[in-house]
Image (cartoon, rainbow, N blue to C red; front, side, top):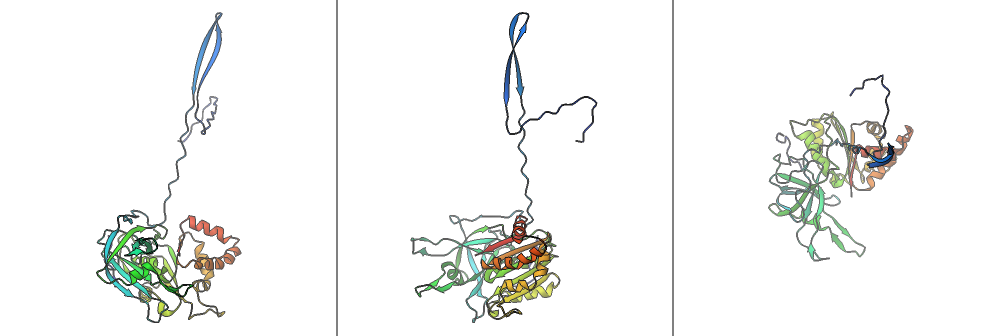
Amino acid sequence: MAAAVTAAVSFPSSKSSTLPTRTSLICPERVTLKKVYREASAGGRVVSVRAQVTTTEAAPPAKAVKHSKKQEEGVVVNKFKPKNPYVGRVLLNTKITADDAPGETWHMVFSTDGEMPYREGQSIGVIPDGIDPKNGKPHKLRLYSIASSALGDFGDSKTVSLCVKRLVYTNDAGETVKGVCSNFLCDLKPGSEVTMTGPVGKEMLMPKDPNATVVMLATGTGIAPFRSFLWKMFFEKHEDYKFEGLAWLFLGVPTSSSLLYKEEFEKMKEKAPDNFRLDFAVSREQTNEKGEKMYIQTRMAQYAEELWELLKKDNTYVYMCGLKGMEKGIDDIMVSLAAKDGIDWLDYKKQLKKAEQWNVEVY
């Protein structure tokens, strides 16, 4: 059971023998049943002697049982599908970026009445209202990372929250194009219905180890799953989970006016200074010592040696959510550091992925 949320939403052994022994080898690949007929002479008569030899089939090797390092026990996936969705209602929808920010990002809370039991790191699908003019059919669902802990922003396990950026851009023909689902969601009013599917995904589930080092790398609305992680770690009390490791968040945005959940994260840092580290990368306002724009990989480069030492430990988990280019930038940092230790970074990263210590969800 989890207690109420403690923070409000801020915007055989063998024996020897003296007898001679003989080892029999049976090939496990083939199973045979042989009947051997031989003729023998007995008192001038020829008799037929039949011997039957049966080999025993070797049992197939047992498959190794994979034990996940993540909080997978009891995880629900695809409870609701497009043909059988869940219809909730909007409880809250508020813009969380400043008016001068390059684009709008909204935080929204939907009712689930406890019918959609999700975990931190999962996603839900949203089916926007209306018909797709291209095919005359209902719009297809879009997936969004969940931005709330399993308890939800209200602490009663009856809501789910999303962090959505309104997509508006100009195409090659000079026409203004609006993203169907993002604009649908950002325009929703409290009380409106919203059609949802899911929950889905296991890639981004939190590690079981409460003493783990969790490095989170986010750009923009890629912050969503990490807000869910951090609420569970620092704003909630659970009988079966108390985080005592290190959570290190890197968040990259274009301007300070587009920093998401900044007050919440700063409050967490005040509450658990030894367990939470927070680094922002504001590309249009900050530069490094070389005068280069401060992207998330630029900020990480300032801690490269420390991060590499952490990545050599088996209780360090890296989670990445946001723009695709981010991972390549991080690869560029780690290649030379790993090489100093005689390690091929790309091979090492594959090992990390196999061990569930490198988790990526980019778009």
